[in-house]
Length: 96
Image (cartoon, rainbow, N blue to C red):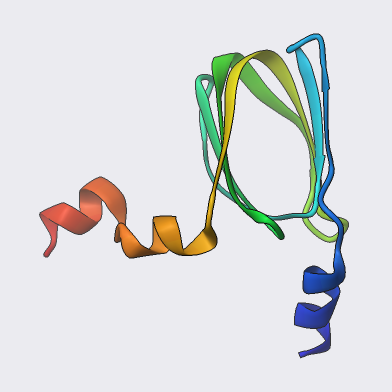
């Protein structure tokens, strides 16, 4: 219970430098990542990052910090319930 309270009280910040370097705080979980797409769960909701040659340079879930390099095309937020309500994606649809 105490651990959940610490996560809720974390702040969420994002710094984007020249669309090539990005740091994010308040990260709870990395749901998915590859060189063109990174999906995160933050204390403020889900975050989807699209780009080219994306690479996670640093990830510390204890502190909630993430550093990304690559060319970033878009950053989209959605509520935490949005992804949960869609099921397990492709595999979830196959095994229904």
